[in-house]
Length: 539
Image (tube, rainbow, N blue to C red):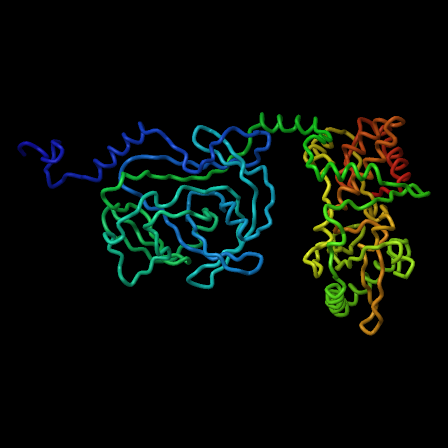
C-alpha cells in the first residue's frame, strides 16, 4: 500500500476511512477544553446545606458540533375548573424527578407544598432549592392514557428546545409516521420534564432509524417521538449541545449534625413571622380568657370581615343527606356517629340554637362534617371532622377569611432526637385537645351544624361551643393555649414548663429523664399543670 489514506494521511486505505471515529475524537478533545454553562439557571448561589434531605444534580454543558435533538411531546393537563391546557413535555430518562414550571403550576391552580428538602445541584457544586412540589394528572393527546405524578416546581426548566431551528425536510421522516410534537424542529419553551420514573413506562415496541447521523423515531404512549443527531439549517450559528442529568444524594454526617444543633437552638423567632402571623399572636394574647374551671376561651382572628360570607345552609343540607345515606347503609357506623354527636351534647361542646343564641352571635356560617374512622386507634376510633373550606354563595369560606397563625411548636425531628437520649422515657397524649378550648360566644354562630337522627326526623340546628377540628386557625390556637400554661407556671416549675414548650408535638408528649424517680415527678407535674387548663393527659 503506497501513500496511505488521502483523507487523514494515516496508514489505511482511503475506503476504510472512518469519519465518525474522527468526529468523536475531535469532540472528545473539544469537550475537555470548552467552558461549561448552566442551562437551567439553577446555580444561583449556595443554600443552607442543613436543609438537604435529597440533592438532585442538574447539569448542562455547551459545546460545538452537530445539533443533538432531545425528545419532546405534547400532553394535556387540566386546571381546577376542568379546563384543558396543552403543555410541552421534555422526556428525560436521566432524571430522577419530574419538574414543572412555576407559571404552568399557577395556570393550573395546583396546590403547592413547600418542600425545602428538594435541592438542585448544578455545575460547580452550586445549589438552589426548588419552589415546592405539586401533584397533577397528565393526559395524552393521542390515546386514553392518564397518570398522576409528583412534580418539583421551578421558575424555568431549560432553555428553548431545540436550541436552534432544525432542517425538518432533510430528515426523511416516513409519510405514514406522525410525530407527536408537530413543531419539534422549532425552538420552544418546555413546561414539564418527565423523568425516568415515568419515561420507561411510556415506551412502546417500535423504532425507526432514519439514517447515519440522523435522529431515531421511537414509538411511545405519547405518540412517535424523535431524538438524536439532527442537521441544522445552514447560515445559522453552530448550536450548543445540552446534557441534562438529575441524581439523588444523601446528606453527609456533618450536614446532619449541623442541622440537629440548629434545631436545638430554635425558638419563637417572631422577627421571621409574617404580618398576619404576628397579628394572630398579638390578638391571642390580648383577647384570650379563662373560665371558672380554668379552660381557655378564645376569639377568632380574621383577615377579612365575616360579613363577606354568603349563605351555606342549602349546601350543608345536601351534604347532610349524603352523610345520612352512608350511615343508614352501615348500622355500626351510624351507632358510633350518633354516640359521638350525643357526646358533644352531654359534654356541653355544642348547644341547640335558639333565639337567645342568635342574638349573642351576629355571624352565621354552616359547617359540613363527616366521620373519619381509624380502626387501629386504641382510643377514639371515630372522629367528626368539620369542613370549614366549604364555599358559601359569595364564593368565600370560613377558612378563607380566618388567619392561619404561625407554627410555634418545634420540629418533630428535634423532639425525637432528644427523646432518644433519655434512658427513661414517657409518652402521652391530651384527650380531645381541641374540644377543651372554648370559642367566645360572639363567634360561635360561625360554627353552626345541622343534625338529623332519622330521614323522617326534623333537621335540627346546633352551634359548636369549642374549637372545631378543621379550621385553619385551630392548630395554632390549640398549641398556643398549651404554651400559655407553660408560661404561667414558668416561675414555679421552670423545667416542667420547658418540657411542655419543647417536648409536645400538638397533643402528643414525647419526653424522658435520667432516672425513674425524676420521670415520675415529671409525669405528676405535667398532669397538674395541664389540669389547670382543663386538659387531661392519658396513655
